[in-house]
Length: 83
Image (tube, rainbow, N blue to C red):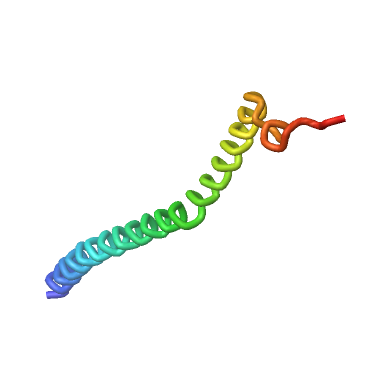
């Protein structure tokens, strides 16, 4: 009789382990999806604006240098000095 009780315990333990494994998998998947959502928010709210600001400043320096190279500085708009 004790042998049958041990076998029942092992059966109940193995069925609980499979249930816990499934719930652990679901929990891990939910945490993974939450982590991805947080990463998307980080990129969208913090990193893209910072990159856009950096890129805009780089572009403006390049554009201003080209603007001056074409001769469109102050003297073009305000006229040359008259002595």
